Length: 250
Image (cartoon, rainbow, N blue to C red; front, side):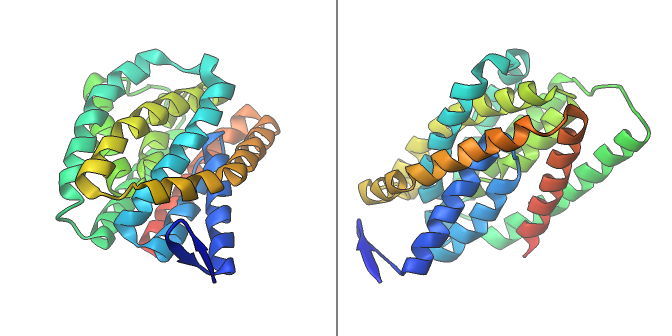
């Protein structure tokens, strides 16, 4: 066992923490869905709500790497539609997080994501080219994204569904997601500190210890994405989103 910043961790647990950090970095630079493997790892080690607070600064660190690399590719027209409703969703999620059972929430979200994926796959197979670029759709997905990112850092799948529906090119998809999550994750910090008390000085110091693993994961994500053709990248995100939804049910 080892004592770190008020945490008592075994060496194997510390190794799992670094693995989670690696997946978070990788997810933010394009291998979307891989961060979902980090969610259950951190929940097992630290518990539901506390793991969400511990994960948030790690996500922000990874967001900074992603924004640094992909910042010129963001589509701001979609971001401006998403931000207001996502902020409202964070407020709702803060309230729900105090009254809803984590397992019930994860199961409901998993079912919603599977249904949405089924609709998307039907559109792909039918070669539906109409893009559902409606304001109400952006508001709905933004609100769901805000709620899910606050309660369990689960908004990656929700945003994947929205941005895939907009049929954004690979780099534009990653850049738009990077700016969205950097902004919304920074917005979440005061709620975690003041309402949930899930971010502390000790937890942040533990986050800093994970920075090298996050950086390596971010580099690995960039390396992988560069080697995936545009037409295959879309299917990679769909597959990773499906796996992430399945992980929520476990």
